[in-house]
Image (tube, rainbow over all chains, first blue to last red; front, side):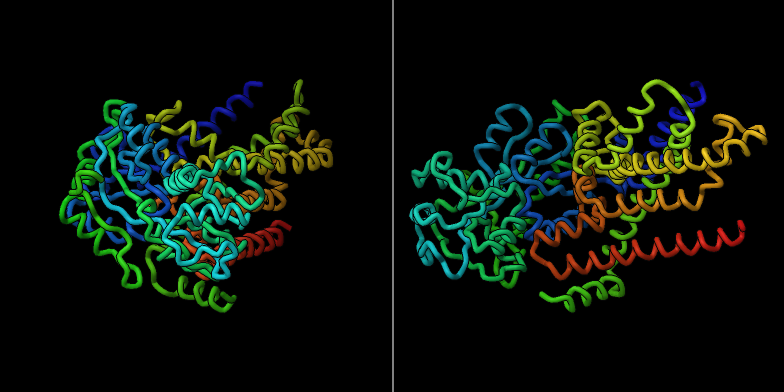
Length: 289
Length: 233
């Protein structure tokens, strides 16, 4: 029926027009340089940097200096790297060294620059059914949790924290695939959700210290194991390859990366404190990081 | 945490003069209302056509549209994400992680509701008034404008149902919008974020504001339709 087809076409056109109208005031042209004031880059980063409030602290400083707005999407490290691979971000800012090196080696971006570190802590209920409180040995603590089959919440989302957790289980000589039972609970969500879940189930959970310090719903949870050097958590930043994705805003994105690793950016990171505690420790000048 | 804290958080948000919060509310309303308007512009005529047209496979189309009322928001979000991603077919538009992408995703969610309910309403109305319309020379699709006008108050409910679905959902806007602070953060994604930060009073406070807004919009629509019905006699 002719009229029907006309209406459908009109409908589809309206949908696109409407979307474009909404986009117009908020989105600079995808192809040309944006006018001053609406310059922006998109950064795919991790839930730990967003949930901890770090970006809220440092991005206004960068914007004041350069006029570049930084739009941050908070994802797990695995997903953030995927976002970069698809070309949906200009910069990735994550924490999982092996995955970052693979990203660079595969030509999706780089070079990788070290930015800062904090550390992971093992959180658990104050009642501590596995009896690990005060230990500095994360590997022994995980063995105790597994032996007692005490509830443990895993991120299960390919995030940097999830990948670190899996490495620690391997270091503990525990084959999760073979030994995991109902005590090991993968939730496939971000750090905050994992902490909420652990609180609700009186379970253990591996968390980055930054998210833990700024987390508000601690309930009966506390830090039980910390200080093991295997709990070190390094963050890195990379430009998404402009060769693969021509629309990547190379100049502005590089300006952000350069600022983050500059003395000024590094000081901004060090200055971010929650309750008087520093959350992230800049180490861009540390050649081994 | 108790409800008092949440209520005081809600009160603080509404009257605290926090521009970031007002921007979030504004974006939520803009995105949702744009999606509802687009869905109404497409869905009302499409639903009416589906009610009156007779063609092979019509039953299958009706089942499909009715079924899509249950389209999971996260799936709608994923589809729009894949289409708008730089690596997807419409990637060159650069629409991913923008409010426009959120409008498209929510339109997809609202459209089946508007089409399905319109189809049912118009079909019933047409059954009732077919002969009367025919006596006025309005047969087939020429009856559509009259039928839509006569059914306008009932159709408002279809659009409100669509509004409810769009304003309440978080899965689609989170995937295609990215929950970027100050740009694509809406009421629902902000609630999800505050929950994950463990700030439950603030999350619930935002929820209270969202529910109040939804109630307010429904109240205005109800009042308008009552007034309209009185004058329409």
